[in-house]
Structure formats: C-alpha cells, structure tokens
Image (cartoon, rainbow, N blue to C red):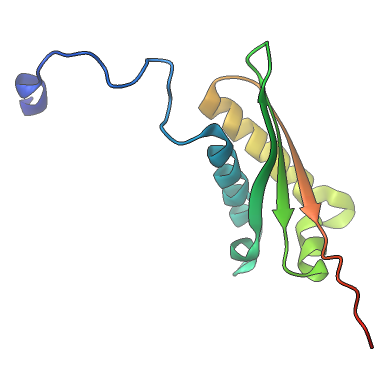
Length: 122
C-alpha cells in the first residue's frame, strides 16, 4: 500500500481520546436536526433552529444536554411536538441512541420546543 509505505513515523496530532475536532455541543445540535429530518417531510426540518441551552459532562463521564428547538410559527411548533409530544420524544430517543454510540458514553438529552409568544392585534 502506497500510503503505508510513504508514511513517516511521528506523534499523533490529537490525543487518542479525542473523537472529533467539532465541539460536542455542535455534534449534539446537528444530530438532533438530522433526526428531525428523518421524521419530518419537505422543508420543515430546514425551518428549525437548534441551540444548546445546557451541556455538561458528568463525573461518571455521561453527558447531559438540553437543546432548544426554535420554530418560526406556533403551527410548526405543534407539528414538531406531535400528538401529546410523541414526535419530539421519538426524536429525543433516537438522538440519544445515536449520540451514545458516537460518544461511547451515556447521553441524557432533553429537547425544548419553543413556541412563538407574539400577541396578534386585530
């Protein structure tokens, strides 16, 4: 193999424990958005804005995070929630599983869907 034959021995650029140069909070946000893309149709996932509100690595090396989902309208917020919160719960569980696999530790994830608080004047 050419690459192995021409490679020069040297120290690694990153510690062996580092999985990515992307911050963990950003990985969590992207994973949540990807899971919404899996279960929502058309342009809906692209209208959502995700933001990490809380991120902590706990003493047992597990990760706890809260991600806020900002929706442009209350109608979209209701679609995101699903019946009795079933859709957002499904996304949270799928994202937790994916992130636990990626980070190789337990991930506890809560999703907070933000409703538009604008008052309409008639």
